Image (cartoon, protein in one colour):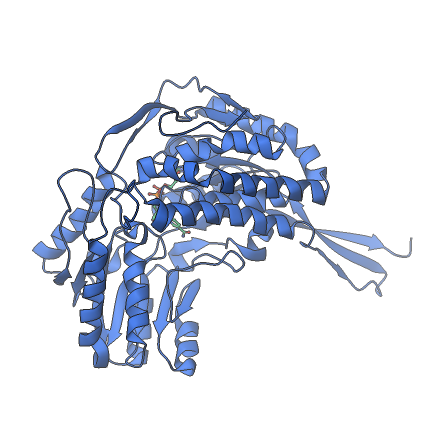
Length: 489
Ligand code: NAD
């Protein structure tokens, strides 16, 4: 099966047991291009109960042999798959771009690169993910094995449709699980297009499958009695529903990577240019549709005015790069769809009407077709306002000043989110003090809104449960089994 997909030949069928098959479900997914609202397809398969069961059955059949495969054979399959993603990176990015609107240079290349790197990284772990053994002087040798969970699944969002596949599928498959991928109903094409690459890499039938669908498909997965784990990335309300469904069904393991409203704190002694650059990138990358974007910016009084000027100029410059995501040189594309555009515009217009803060820059639609919006910042925003307390998921930030370190730690932590935080200062002691005082899963010092494949990625409080990346991801896809050997037998 050669890779042949493009925007004129879209993958629309489910990938089960290494074959494309049609769902019998009469309900289909409809997709639009966010740059102009044009129809992309209205006949993409939406997996129903029958399809989910078929995928689980195929995975269960594949599992015994996949678990027993040698380290080297499994590693080589993951490495081959990584190189196939790289080889077809441009086509995969285009299949995402036609419904997400993210330009290749500023997002597509990063995202496909991250997916490929995740498979390489996890392939490297396969023969190094050791268990443990404990002293046997009490007459018992204790061995702890990390064993695969069985049939696992990943439910991913639209804002990082392929990167999130790497973060979930690669550690699941590296540790000997079978994996069912459920992409977002807004970005199914790149995931479905993985089908031929899965086959060409050498994954046996049933090991790695793709079910396009919407929340109803996700709900079937979350409540399935024979799926042993769901790793989910998406919104907090859906994350809570998945946790509930997992508990009500078979207590499947759950990893949740959820939303954020991440603070960034800039002290008087910070390198201003560096802080401005990271913070302008943070809310414009992927048009602000990034879970760990630093959207609450706090700047100390001494440099506040200078920061405002630099931040505003940087965002105005970013605004000039808004345009057709298919054109080279475009940095900011549109928001993903009308629903997201209405949501973000709603926050902006209520912010203005209700005087939740003062509009510093942006605040308007760009053009009159497609879902383009200017980078937008509100200043002096009230602590209880929705602009300051809710995840907007667009290129919108709030900017406030502060006086003291103690005060700003309290204000930064006064939220139920806890994904990412940033501190900008040249005082190393203060940087480490503040980093440890933040309630968040990740902290940047003189940087923010970034992630590394080798270190734990995830949130505290309502931003999530569990961690992806690094060794944590492998542990999250395995069950620890203690074997006790009677040495006196
Ligand atoms: P979403 O919760 O609407 O959907 C995510 C996925 O869940 C989709 O595949 C969807 O079909 C599925 N789904 C919907 N209802 C379901 C149900 N009842 N049961 C099972 N699955 C269901 O989120 P979204 O709008 O696609 O993504 C945006 C959100 O994702 C934002 O809140 C963002 O912060 C978050 N996000 C978090 C991270 C992270 O790593 N922490 C990364 C990216 C995005």
